[in-house]
Length: 268
Image 1: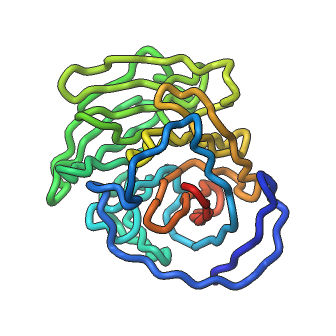
Image 2: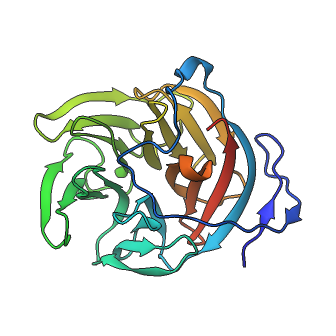
């Protein structure tokens, strides 16, 4: 059963009211919001209400738009990647016994990329049938063999991925499919306590970073500099994030409860 709660700015205090919404098949190839993207300096989204949907994706730890635009792909700590509809129906997409902590999609080719913590691996599932699994990169010098390793991945632009190492250290990696790793930023000591997930927003040319330890979602530059921080203390362990301009919201998934939260924003 869906519910919706009124949020005070950056607070989790809430009053329950009813909600209904409809969703359409989306495409990530073209931004849904028309007009010229604003600059990070004058871009100030305002958080509004939230609702939640139940899924059966175990320990859901990452989100991206599904290849067909109907719902999400969800990364599961326990069994790989699931497809999740807008109302929470969960089915297998690419499953197996591996610690999948993040998932993203190339909007042009529809190839899907996912990360495996501990082994520190980045994989590609080749469209359209997603049966060919290619290991494309291993981050061996940080997080290898630990539970503090790769936790977030997002398609950036020009054949490039942004990859996040959770902590010890908190690292943002730029990886080119043609050139390999091209940049690395150590964000340890910043206001971010960890990287739980990443979502690049091509409409605004900004990066959103989920920080489950501080229970925040963070609007950042593509270099990881925090511009604004939003409390999501009503979510126990928010480890996945997806920015959805079509519905003026940000979706955050909870690793503890397997719920996905739809958080509305104005000026998103």
